[in-house]
Image (cartoon, rainbow, N blue to C red; front, side, top):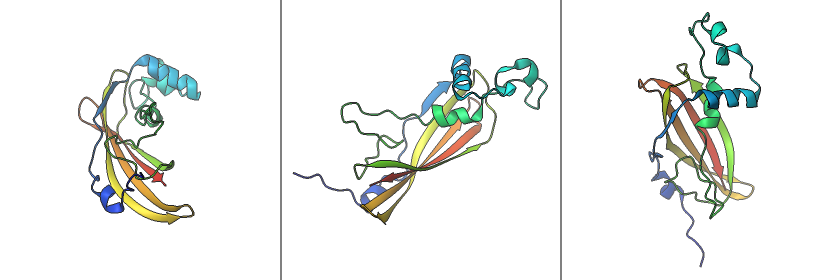
Length: 161
């Protein structure tokens, strides 16, 4: 028995669906390990003496850490399926490809900040490709700090075919 393929209309019914918020405290050790892993030795990240004389008045967390920390999705080990960033949204086809990811940064973050991130399915389109019908899923993520300030926004485009 074959499974029913989801249509564009089915998928558009999921627009506005959000993942549960992800809350994380930016810990020194996580930031240190990230800076070391990507070999970004900017003293603004780890050198308090240097950073206190900048416009930030102290060290800040490298903004690009969010593309790692806030983009993490859990893979189902049972099915082997890679979910979209909004787990309550089904994938209409079997194959997934990251189409594009953009980031905007609005406020600096510091060690100890508590970041709450949400991700919402914001658009669904269909295009015809060489292998047939492709769904283009757009998910928008936003992260705010403990003061409710918008820290960053991401837009992730997923190609599902």
